[in-house]
Image (cartoon, rainbow, N blue to C red; front, side, top):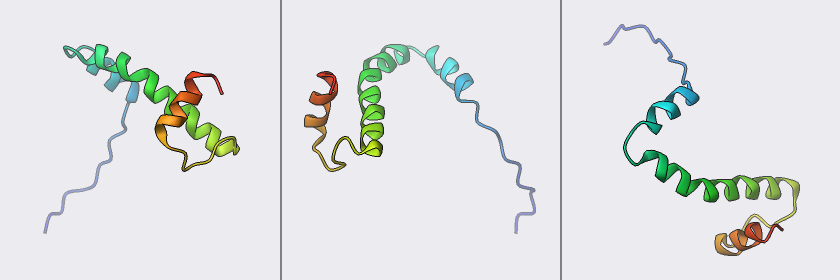
Length: 69
């Protein structure tokens, strides 16, 4: 049996993102997906507030987000 002591490591998201941004093509991919993830985040907020049904199809939801609803 392994007797090594458990040593948790804190994740630094900002440092990890800064390092990843240096990889070729990562920054472009990050920017390309930023709009989608922003829409998803807005969607979670709308669901939490009760402004939108949680089972609404994603394509209809994204249309509403782009229209500002």
